[in-house]
Image 1 (cartoon, helix red, strand yellow):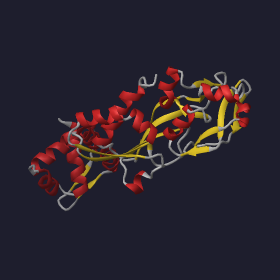
Image 2 (tube, one colour):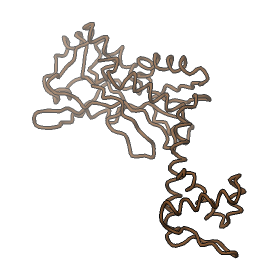
Image 3 (cartoon, rainbow, N blue to C red):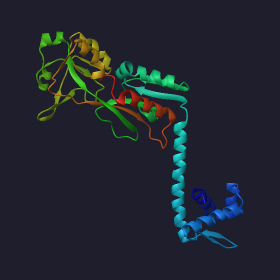
Length: 300
């Protein structure tokens, strides 16, 4: 006996309260349906259905078994559907929101590879530091770099952490001196990235615990790369993620400051709306992002 098939047949008989109707819907003979239910009852050692010439009804045991069958069969169907969904080739439009600086400096290779691997996928990329509403604005996914994400109905997959460094050019330090403690930043001109979760409160980890310093300065921008020229020109001190300043750190054009006081790290996430089945186009994006940034990010 194929128990799974027999369970499906039993379910249909109970739902339709008729062997004849169940047989018709399953494309089987009434005798075949009756045989499957009978074999199932023999296997279980229990009567599942009362049979009379007038009516058909499930027994008490049959009702309990029916409820379990419904749950199990629905789970089997969901599992099958999910596997078929995962095997489908991604097609259609993928609308993705990426942060400006990260998109420009880090995402180009990922987007290019995604396009090459899945030529039927049409990519629509919006580079912006604004916090888009995925559902209301029709985005399939977003890349977000935050110390923490707000509670929402979105699914968020953390890919890696990104260190942030306080830095300044040698020219600035020669003119104004180098801060030795986080509190010294209060007397320095700081370049403020306003899209940071706390742009004017820079957090540090010290031996005494976490310390927050209120900073200020003559330049603010909601685009991290807009702060690079003032930073290199010696206009102030900045707190920026490593992927933004990696090259100028290596070349010596800027210097990392306050190395004994690590700053709060941020995390790289890919977020997408919660659905029962992850669509193929979002799945391949998440997988490729994990491949490129989850194991060892490029800036490391």
